[in-house]
Every structure is written in structure tokens, then in C-alpha cells.
Image (cartoon, rainbow, N blue to C red):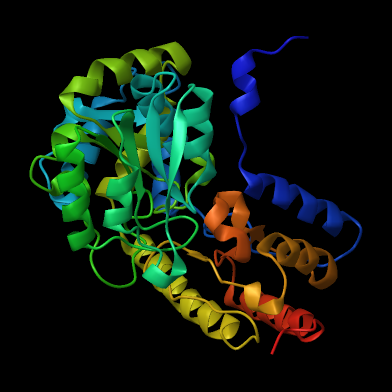
Length: 391
């Protein structure tokens, strides 16, 4: 069967492949600590589950309006206005199947063959994959450990060309946990306006923050009309399997998002949207407790990694990942991650799964219990001790 030429450019998400390898190893009887998947290990809060169950019992199983049910669009608008610092109205909100739906529609709507999109490196691999799929050219902006995994604004400016259409930001970031400061975003906003760029601001980890403030670039003067905000329920409310995301879009993109939703998924499940209304308007205690636990796990894993010879790890300000530099062990990130799984029973990801800057790094998710994190750290220390680490 002949596949379309565009299929040559589409990538994948390595975390799922790594998880499959780890599960296959487990099936042989090996005990594996899973630190590869970016998924909260908490249950969806009971009040949210109950709201969806009540909706099912009420027969909320039919088509919903394609942009989302009015109650959810209103709840998102109110929550975003409060938390993100700029006025959001329901007509600018589109409910999508996961955050990936927002990425897909934004890139489909904006990128023609030959256009360029600046994407973070290291960064979530689907940004680059979708740009290539649409015939565009992804241009990586390096995020280096030496700069706290924040982009260098002067370097960003040097990458902008007449073909640049889109700039993708992710803060707090996957895979590094890095957070852009207000000052960073103000300089980025000036560049976006000067060069007439659209910004895709992935803020899915915006509430999983341990210090500092979360600043939405859309809240800065002149930016709401050129920013697509991506957010959702997967990370904040432990609702990954619900596949519920949303976009806040400028008026100029509302038609495009609507048409793309209709042509792809028609709508998101109605009863799930009722659950999402409860997520936003109900008690937030479970979110606060989850973030507090992630904070404790962050400190546990960072302190433990920095005690291992040849490993250095920054303390991330948000999300639930660390991106340690393991090059001091004499191994590349890919070699380290592969051997760590098969020789020590700890599953992580090679840094190069997220871009070329990650060649000496691995990504570990601390969305696992403190007990399992301690077990993983012990195994990593023993693994590295068995290597001939450069002095």
C-alpha cells in the first residue's frame, strides 16, 4: 500500500515506546520502576468522577456543540480570567480532545509548506512532528541547563526569518520543568509583535508550580490577539485518560478552530465535559494536595540525583520532570537510559527524545511514589557505581 508522502515526516512520542519496552521486561519477571510516563499517579478526584457519573445517568451521551458545552466554556473563561490574568470570554474557548488537539489545530491553521515554526529544544516532540507533517520547518530554540532551561531571547531573535509564522512556548516545561520569567516573556512578546508572530503558549502545567509565579504571555499588552493558549485537565486534575483539553484563541482564529473541530472529532464527549465543569468550579483541595506531594518528590529526586557521581540535576520550578545531565558518567543520555532499564530496572527516557540539546541528558518523571523514587535512586547509584566514571 502506498502511503502519502507526508507520512515520512511524522514523528512519535517516545515515552509510550519506552513504556512498552519496560512492560515487556516486566513480563519476564523483572521488577521495573516506571519513571518514563508523564502522568499523575493520582486518581481523578471523587467529586469530578461523581459529576460525570451523574451526567451519564441523566442521559448526557449525545452530541455536544462542537466548541464545547456552554457551561464548560463559561467555566473555562471565568477560571482563565482569574488565573491567567487577562479577560477571556466563552466565545474564545474551544474544548478539544486533549492538549494535542490544540497543537494540531493551531499548526494546521497556520503552517503552510515552507513556513517555519520555532519550537523548544528540548521540548515536547509532537510540536516538531506536527510542523513537519504540515510541510513546515521546525526551527529549534535551545533550552540549556546553563541557563536554567530558559531560552536566550537574543538567540531567539537570531532565529526569526521572514518565513517564521509560529513560536511555541511551554512553561512550566516538559521535559525540563523550566519556567520562563515575566522578564523573559516581556522580551519575547516584544519580538512576537515586531515580527508579527503567532504564539502557541502550552500552559498545561501552569498550576503545577513550586516557586515563583505563572505568567501567561497572553496577559501581556498586545498579546491576547496573537496568542493561542493551550491548557486542559489531564495534569492538574489527574484526568489523562479523559482526553480533555482546551484552547483560548483570538477572534481571528475562531473560524479555523471551529472548522477543524467539525472536520476531525465533531465534539468532545458530553458527560466528560460535565465532569470538567465540576473540576473547575468544585473544591480544589485535591489539586493543592497533589502539587504539595509533587513538591516533596521533586526535592527527594533532585537531592538524590545530585549525590550520584557524574550526574548533575537542576531543581525544576514546575511540572513533574527532572532532566539531569548524565554525561559525567561517560555515557550519552540514550546509552544511560537503555542500560539503566536493562541493568537496573529503572525506566526513563533519553534526552534526545526531546531534541538535540538533550544528548547528554535523561528525563525522569517523578509522578510515582516516594517509596519507588527512593528505590530508583538506590538502583541508579548502584548502576553508576559499577561504571568507570571519569574523575
